[in-house]
Image 1 (cartoon, rainbow, N blue to C red):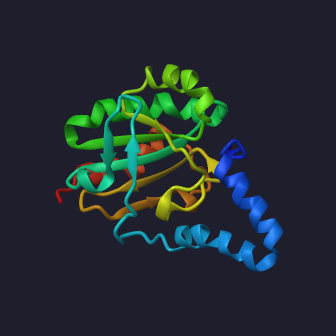
Image 2 (tube, rainbow, N blue to C red):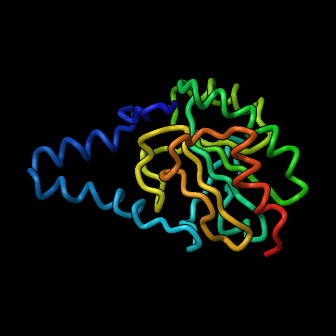
Length: 186
């Protein structure tokens, strides 16, 4: 089960959609560019860079985590499957941190919901920040959650969450996807 991301709270997105509607079909075609980038994701190729602006003030760039296995996860406090997945992912991350696992959590919640995000983040073993937009760079528009992407120690995409039929992390899926990456050297 997944949630459809409600990103209508993002004012810039609403303004862009209004402009596109006013300019007609030609302008709307420009909205497809971020989606096309997500289609370009290829396993074994360099993962698109992302920067987490964590709630504690740190900026954590995926490009600075070479040598580690990185899970980039997108979630929201209002998404029940996300809330079920987060404790599983947090426990796994805590158990495997010494092996070089880093999880970065991007919340799709609105800034007004920051207290709720902070409450959830306080229970997690990994840093969390607000995404701030419906778009996640080269990963495209986040339209369904939970969705995660796994980056290997060499900075290459090892798991594309858009391709997963059951995208929520389970213990079995973590063992299948991430554990083998942790045992490999760069």
